[in-house]
Length: 239
Image (cartoon, rainbow, N blue to C red):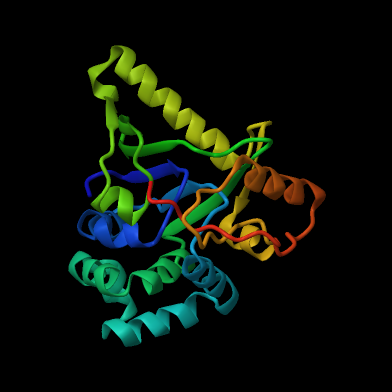
């Protein structure tokens, strides 16, 4: 809640994670000047895909009015009151996903790794020149934050030495993927990736395979839209 920027690289994202992070996230969004930035693999729940597409297609005003009707609060209250936004995130998480993206307070990009999987779990908080970076096994999902046994290593730049070097390296990696300058990967805005059929919706207990990701990368390189797979789909694994 005190950081002036919050960025995350994650293999899997679900909007349910926003509900669990609501207290600190609401304060950060209201008081911060930088949008929350998420880099994710090409795997989202169907409901999250639909809301991200709706926010892009219907425009921020339409999404804003829908959320205002649900919350019973006006636009200025949502982005000026941490308490109002926290309540909205907790009770109307999916609508808040669309609202925050429509207002450019939450930005999501999809990373397609050539011949591989985008699988980091790195959480980056910056306050001026200070960096606090957590890396380990924690995805940006509800299950990871609420139920799983996870591991995280924390690097603090103000301690200097190897911790400062590690924190800076991870930040630079994030920025390179965000800018799309990594030669082994393509980074695409989430709404565009969904429209082009590059984001899978998983509906079974099995995690996505290397082949699933390779197919998504191939479709991106060909500039085409993904065909409907004949094999059973998958859902977000409980990672």
